[in-house]
Image (cartoon, rainbow, N blue to C red; front, top):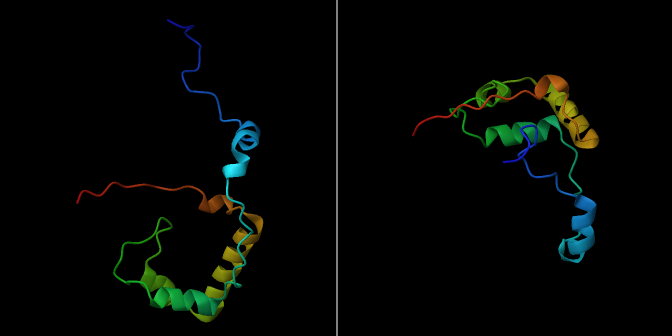
Length: 103
């Protein structure tokens, strides 16, 4: 038996060592050039979704989002553009809840 304080988890992967050993086999991709997210694009996406589906992790139903006025959808699009540019979600939106639903 090992020491009682020993961490049973394997060590964290070493990305630089992995990339040095296998980098030739890792595909190189250019960053995706996405069109700017707009209220119109959000509305189009929402119209193509089922309104009766369960709410998202944020508690919003599709039909609620689809009923937002354009100025509110534009604010949502602005928030999502900021997330895309920064790569970070606002701290208030990070907690999540997972519920297992028997089928």
